[in-house]
Length: 191
Image: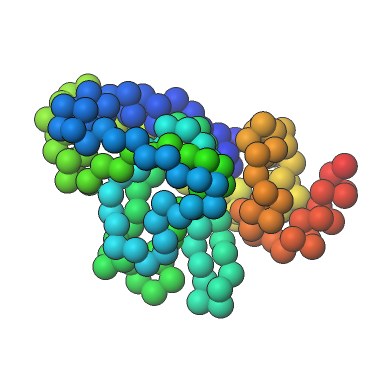
């Protein structure tokens, strides 16, 4: 079951397929970001595509009350995108924060879309990644709707223990949709 911590192979394949075109266009420029740095903040008008070459990033919504809700985590080699603030309604934009030191490539979305349209191999990698993201989102939605937070935590422990060990406990609580106090109770019951 994919609850949002599994990385799969689709993102690394897409990164590898994009690299030669990005290098040829002189857009392959890795940027090192420290732990705690914002890749982009909620409300930033970025629709660029970000390639995570190493590290751990969380995608997070901030509610009008200032609470953080974790959309997903991107681990090690992954692909994510900003959602331009002009495309998002109130409370619909999210930010990306480094939970570990990260190395990131930032590509303009028009470049990526043009590259995908012009290369059958890249298109196949993009389609595989899009299908993986859709399956991941559907599994996460189903888990949020039909499983208790404790059942989701048990599944994370069983299916992604190494990834789970890298996350701050407060972020795990937000990812499960519970308060840190409720998460402490769940951990005691599961232990």
